Length: 573
Image 1 (tube, helix red, strand yellow):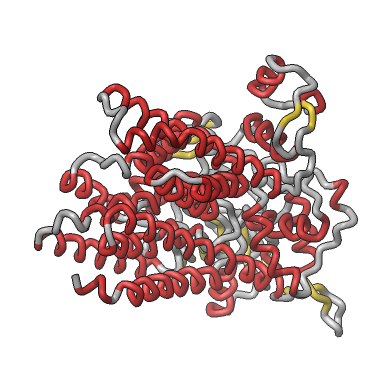
Image 2 (cartoon, rainbow, N blue to C red):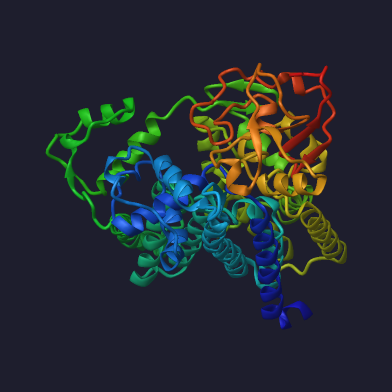
């Protein structure tokens, strides 16, 4: 086809467009909740090599974005770090040291502007990983279905609002998506021709996935599980003497080598700090790890870095996350959370193309099965565990996997009919229109069937809608409207004065001092957190700002900050 002759140009165009969309959005969005601690913690590790705060906090997505900061004037006093008990303390120190500068005349602290610039520099690393994710999706799809299918996959991935939303942030989700795709593609190549080089490649990808996020450890189980299923299927269907079956039988030594290389990569990521510490020296918080330790001798060396292993225990012991789904809160999560999140936050053209790929092409081929099985089982794991129902970002890796699945619509071996080609073109065109009209507000994206971002709070909150990303928009709005000061309740850790906002904290039940009030969507609809970066103010009452819910906002900034102009006799007057 004619597209194939221009393949390289189309790939370059898609990646450049993806970069422009992501970088342009990143420049306009303030530092989000998790970024606040991730980048400073990574910088602290780069300067000290101290991993004691990296228990449950991914190392690689913090350290890599922090590396460019070493060439800047970013300040972080590390002498106090050994006494810190949380990476959030690194975030607080970083904002104090880099968020302000002294006015030479009055001596008052003024916003420096460097704070946001440092995070923007770190975000460029994440955007590079976003481009890598899209490139891996293209390459994997091309190897499965051919060049035209690869281009379709690339276009869908580059235009995914969810990938653009989280691929521009200093958070681990896009890093895990890249590592998971790399692992699946490496596994596919290993199945085709087992050898040591491909085995080591798979091992490196598995190790990187675990360093990107503890969820990556699931791949150490799921990929051998897929191999076992293939072997069992060949055995039951009497295919033991076929070339494919023989290759699958020979793969086990190479797969064991991959797992060993993966463990070595994990240890290398922590500079072998505490590797092979005896089991008896750990103090566990979770019930599961207590039971695990009771079954094994205390002298047994643990072949993982100390703080990585403690991170597993810390994650298992975590609780108390407020889950919100369709107007309901609970502390235990919802089985349907991630399924609903995918249905309301994935653009309809992608959902429709995924369905068409099943009905038009049929069941997955043997080479597609690892992709489908891993995607389904990881979604099932998150759904059944109900752990941290706080954002679709936890299953972000499914977005490029869906793009690869869509690629099968244009598989080379089955020349697509004219109606199918036209359907795909129209769907991709609609997806492009959706993404371009959503820019730069990708984080609060909801598809039109769910009511769009304006009604997103009816379905989901937290990082699905409001992650403290619109302080820049609030400052610009105040400048444009000539507003000197505002009563503010902002969801996030970053003090609004870092972005030059003059405000008074809007506390529940207190009298207003300004005619203008701004409230973050999460706080307005009942999800409480630190308000205005004030560690001493975290409302316990989910109805703290209920009085404002029935009022018509004067403006809604980025779908995440509601601005009200209120007369004296109205709420809080």
